[in-house]
Length: 419
Image (cartoon, rainbow, N blue to C red; front, side):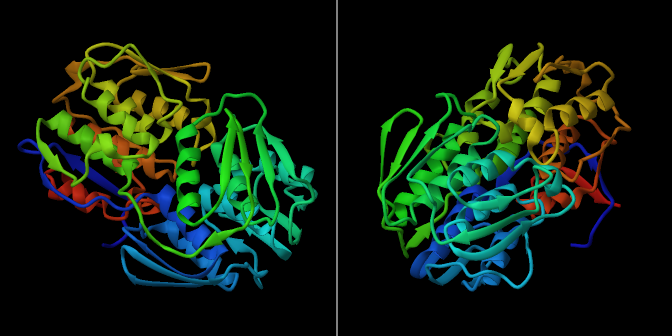
């Protein structure tokens, strides 16, 4: 499919109905790729995601001497010595936050100099808390701007047997150190500064993938993990379909009164964003307050859904949305107000959406700016189910995690015209 500057949307002529296969989970795919690279031997990953983010991860691993083959769109074969070698050039990871943070910690227990970098958007995303934690562990690591690029001069191990880290800004910092610390030959303790952490479900995903690759660990207390050492073992690993991607289709089904078969039970999914499914089922009478702390990537979906709710919805626990691919709280507010002035407002770090069910069927000339953020593009496409004339700018940013999104939405009945 050729690149497009925008897509114009037309509401479906009938309820959106059909069956499709979701892409694999981006979060799980990138964790599994890294752990397969840190394991000695050959691993086979099935049900995997092929997208910009996983491509950046696999290319970086290849640059560090890991064999990564892809016999099909949903399969990776990883052949590794269990070590990562310094690359000839800086590791370019685009705007892949998971890959950037995970690799930064992983190379810190290798040998040699590594430079981890990204595109103009990644260079605005914070990584200082992770770098500061690595420095406390005796690693020579610098990120002068507090964002990538990061330079790491690694000596083969951490210089301490534990660290305390603030996971409030991003659970990815915690996951990054957990995955790296399991490579050590000795016991290592990671503790949270405080017991609260955003997106705890993603740490649970990290631990589940680590366990599958043979990592040994204990959880002595809330916010305390003890890695028992010994590294990883190559294995065959099946990746769950992406729950974040599923939220768009769950919402489309609800909004259009259709029936979309994704081949997966929402209640059986382990990813945090699966918690959005029961919330979507409450539309058009969503709760007055929704805590988004444990389903952060689903908030743009829920915010667009809330625009057509019968009553206002306030999203709380979403401070971390300000440091995603863009400031998603501000982006959602700004773009919702293009649909109708005053439709949304920011209250501190909260987002208040003044639901207006009368918007259904009204023509909108709004041009939705996507901030190079795949989730803004995909979420706001849902408004096109009700409002003819809506335009999504830079639609191909969905390639970050769901390259076939527009094809799938068109197949379900949404009018999608590429300009």
